[in-house]
Amino acid sequence: MLRDITLGQYFPLDSPIHKIDPRMKLITAIVYIVAVFFAKSAVAYGFILLTAILLIVFSKIPIKTILKSLKPLIFIVIITGIINVFWYQPKNDSATLLVSFWVIRIYLEGIISAIYMLTRIACIIIGTSVILTYTTSPIALTDGLEQMLAPLGKIHLPVHEFSMMMTIAMRFIPTIIEETDKIMSAQKARGSDFSSGSLFKRIKALIPILIPLFVSSFRRADELAIAMECRCYRGGEGRTKMTKLKFRFTDFLWFVLVGSMIAVNILINTYLPFFVV
Image (cartoon, rainbow, N blue to C red; front, side):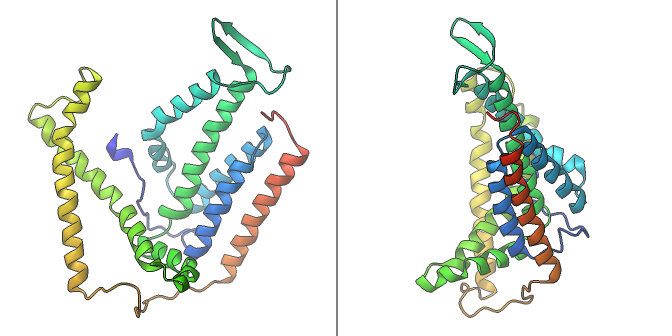
């Protein structure tokens, strides 16, 4: 299961999305998330899902990798769907009641709402991963985030340090996952059991994993700090960049496409309000 987590990984491929300016990708990710939450009808969610599929196609990321990124979240997705089905409260008397047993009432609109919620979660995970982490290197993402937040530096906010901190955190997610998998394999070889027993017993069995994981993480952080100091890193002030970000025609074309996506989504919600819950 841990090996299926691809959060924070970068896949260096030659695709149109890889070549987009990281600042434009950050803007695109924000617009995409807004578009997902603006969706209200079945047609709108279908359009958002189609957009996510097109992002996968243009990014050239293998579909197996995308599905593996969703696999660790299946439990959370299922719980979210169940909550939406059983706790749905109809807004009017026209709701279609399917099941009525004791205090349990399941409505058709509740099932549709659960499907919408699951589609929303999947599209946000897929879209933001494809737009940002899968197709953007940590260095490019740091530069893009720093330049976008540059105006905040005028009020003495540590923009560079914040961008560096966010990127380092994302960069070491795959490393920590790999380290956790190694520690679990070592503990299993010593006879540890993480899959049987009561919930309290399973939680207690995680202690031999968490302690060496924390020790390893602090050691890695200390080594990284020493390496940065040895390279005379003193923060963002006065630093230059080897590669300067510049907007190109393809970036503006990408922006037009993203703006069109939001416009189409609004039009769909306005003129095609099918199965709105």
